[in-house]
Picture 1 (tube, rainbow, N blue to C red):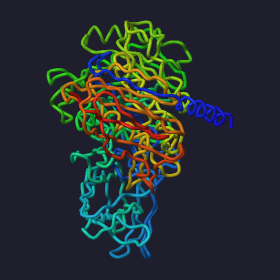
Picture 2 (picture 1 turned 180 degrees about the vertical axis):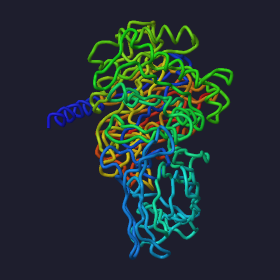
Picture 3 (picture 1 turned 60 degrees about the horizontal axis):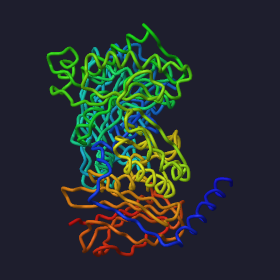
Picture 4 (picture 1 turned 180 degrees about the horizontal axis):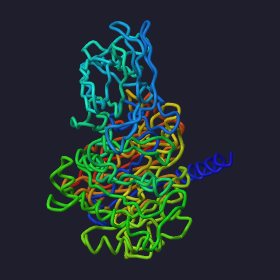
Length: 625
C-alpha cells in the first residue's frame, strides 16, 4: 500500500506539470558526448534454468545421473506387457569425470514386450515436424541386444520418431543415433524420450543425450528461437559466465573453466548457486562460440577468490586462482603455439578470439570479508604484466587498484529508477568508466510488466545521455523457464517453456533502444514537462538520423513542442509501445500483448506539436538535413 501511495502521488505531480506549456529542444549540430560502441549488451548466468532447460538445446534432463538426491530423478523404468526391469547404481563410468553410471537390469523382455528407461526432459520435450534430432550415449552392454529409441507423445503414446542402435557387449563405448520427425507431426511439448531393449541382460548408461536442431547447426549448441530473440537485441557484448555462477557456493564449486572444455564426457557437472545441477555443457568454448554466432564481444568474468558463502583466499592462497585466470585468457586469445591456445585448437577452434575486457570477480561490493581491496590488486598486476592491452573491470569501488571500469548493479522499482535518472549526469569523467553489468526494473513475474518497461526505458535514457561515462550496460537476468520450479528470480527479460518463447515488455524496450541508437549524444533540453517524462537524443551523422526517445510514465498524455535544429521536414518513422496500465504484460499464452507498433509522424521546419500518450515509450527516427 505504501508503494502505491507514493506512485499515485508521483503521478498526480506529473499531471500538474504536464498541464504547463512543455517544450523539448534538440540541437543536432552540437555534440555533448560520443555514444560508446559497446553500450548495450547481454549478461548471462545459470539461473532460472537459463542454460540447461533453456538456451542450451539438450532435451535430456539429468543426462549424467548426478543429481544429489534422488540420483535418477527425471528417469523412469519402462516396461511393456510381461517385461520387467530395475535401475541400480552403476559402479563404473566412461571417464574419470563421469566415473559412475545408471545400470539397467532387464529381467524379462522380448520383441513386443520391451523394457528400458524413459526421460521426461525439462517439463516436456519440444517436437516439431520435419526435424532432425541428434543423440548419443555411452554404454557398457551385457546381453540386452539392440537399443530401440523413440520420442513418444505423452497423451496418445504415439511414436513421433524412432531409431535402433546395435550394441556391442564389452567395455564402455559411445553410440550415436538420429531421430527424424515426419511432416505431419503436430508441434508440441508434452512428449518424452525412451530407450528399450528386447533381451534379458544389463546395460550401464552414461551421458545420455538428445539435441533438438540448433542455431547454426552447432553440434551441441543453442535453441534457435532464443538465439534469434537475442540477435534482435543487437547486443554488442556478452558478459559470461555470470554472476553468482562464477563464484559458486564454495571454493570447490566456483566456475572452474578447465572442467568445462573438451569432449562432454570429460565434464563432471556440478551444483549451481541456485540449487539445481548444471551439465557443464555450456562451457568456456560454448560461451565464446555464442559470442561468435551473434557477433558480440566477450566480456570474460574470472573467479577472484571469493564465494557466496564467504570463503575466500588472500595472499599466496590467491596464486592458484591468478594462474587459473592467466591460463583462461591464454585459452581465449593464444595462438596454437601456446599451451592453452593449442588446447583450444584441439577443441575445434584454431583461431584465437578477440578479447578486450576482463571482469575480476562478481559483486564484490557485497564481499562480507572486506577482502576485495586485497584480492583485486594482485589480479590486476598479473594480468597487466602479461596482457597490457586488456581493459580491467572491478566489481567494487573499494578495489585498491586502477581498473579501467567499475561494475555498478541496480535492481529497482519503476519509481526508484525514475529518481536515479540524474545519477551519472555529474559523474567523475576522469576516473574509471562505468559498466552497469546488471540492472532491471523488478515488477512483474516471471517476466516484467509494462510498468517495469517504463522504468527500464527511463533508466536507458539516462545511460544514453551519459554514454561517455556509462560505456557498457546489460539487463539481468536474461532468461527464465516459466514452468513451476523453473524460476528462482522474478522479472526476467525472456520467458520460455520447452516449445515456445516470448519477449517481455522490457525485452521490447531493449530491442527498440539498441536498434535506434546513434553514435553521438545531441544537446537537448526540456522545459515544463511532467516529472515522469524522460528523453534522450542521439544522432547518426552517417545515416543523417536523430533517434529521439520519449518516455511518458504518467497516466496523462504529454503535449510537447518539439524544436529540433537540423531536422528535415517530412515524414519520420515512429515505434511506439503503450499500455492502459502498468500491469499489462506478455506471457507464454499471450506473447505479444505488448510490442512496438510502427507508424509515422510529420516533421515540420522549425518546431511542431507532438503528443506522447500516457504510459508510452516512443522512438522517433527524424531525418536530418
